[in-house]
Image 1 (spheres, rainbow, N blue to C red):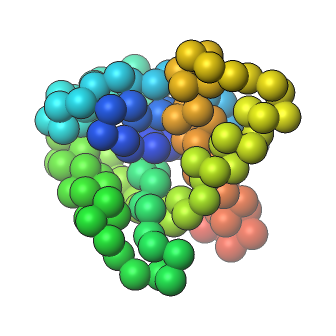
Image 2 (spheres, rainbow, N blue to C red):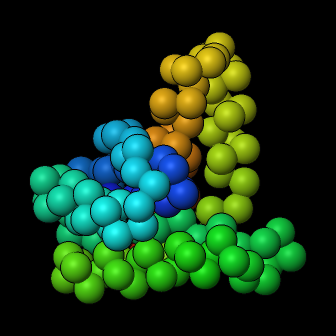
Length: 142
């Protein structure tokens, strides 16, 4: 199944995708958009372009497992995206993915403007890799 992941942000939204084999998550782009509705529209267009059969949106729960303001905004984003695309959208716990993305970029010595441009796409890759690992280990197929 082609699955697209989204690391939604107020200014930049990272997008990653995997092919039908569900083996490798690859970064696609970062949407630079501050308008909530326009970001949903651009994400929906990418889902269509990538032929996504499922979308996973990062769900940034608090470290203690509670749902905060940011997670609520991501939930609303996911709900609106599903309405617009007709594609099943799942929320996926993304705690620490941005930190992990920064750590990965430290290893490759990616700094400055280049880092800012890719960190959200790397975070989307990490969200998707985590979700794909869950699917493989749980036997989930939908």
